[in-house]
Amino acid sequence: EPEVTQTPSHQVTQMGQEVILRCVPISNHLYFYWYRQILGQKVEFLVSFYNNEISEKSEIFDDQFSVERPDGSNFTLKIRSTKLEDSAMYFCASASGTGDYEQYFGPGTRLTVT
Amino acid sequence: GQNIDQPTEMTATEGAIVQINCTYQTSGFNGLFWYQQHAGEAPTFLSYNVLDGLEEKGRFSSFLSRSKGYSYLLLKELQMKDSASYLCAPQGDTGRRALTFGSGTRLQVQP
Image 1 (cartoon, each protein chain N blue to C red):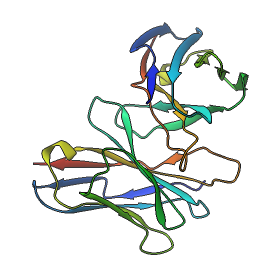
Image 2 (spheres, rainbow over the protein chains, first blue to last red):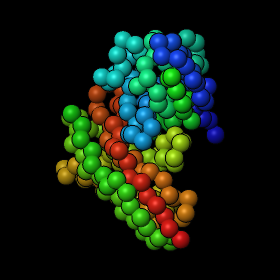
Image 3 (cartoon, each protein chain N blue to C red):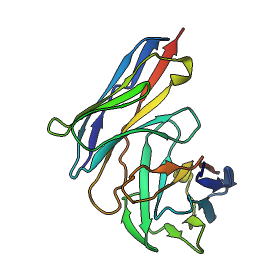
Image 4 (cartoon, rainbow over the protein chains, first blue to last red):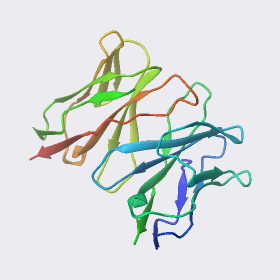
């Protein structure tokens, strides 16, 4: 069964450093999302991406964040200058968009900023 | 804005039935998802309601009333592996339909 994959599973970085989180969505899906979940808190929407551009973003997704689909398979989230409060689990999700609105989530990347 | 309300915790016995309620207020609405999340893992899809009424899927059923801003998830024949958080997630009707998750209901199934 096709699935969303994410790398790395765990990333430790120092405050102020740039990080790139990688996702490979399900191959025939057209809609891509990033969510995050701070430990013990709810899952929060960050950004959605369709047709090579951002279609919606939340207040959390400020200028420190960017997304990119550099090739036909990868979907990346970049945080330019990490802060302690960026420590969270980051989930990538994808959806086909053709009548099936279910978003399939990847296993997540745990980001720890020290 | 978005406001989603569901109980924080529930406890039930193996083999029993449990109903997890969710009320929501959203600025735009397309449908409502229920996801299951085990600790430290990603949310996994359980159900999706776009029309009023009950959707049944094996041991899990979900109900939606759009006019009341109300949904519930019904779990039958509870198993120990059903111990998890259950996330109510209304879907907006703008952009590419991002999900707004509630804080989730942590269900503990006891023997």
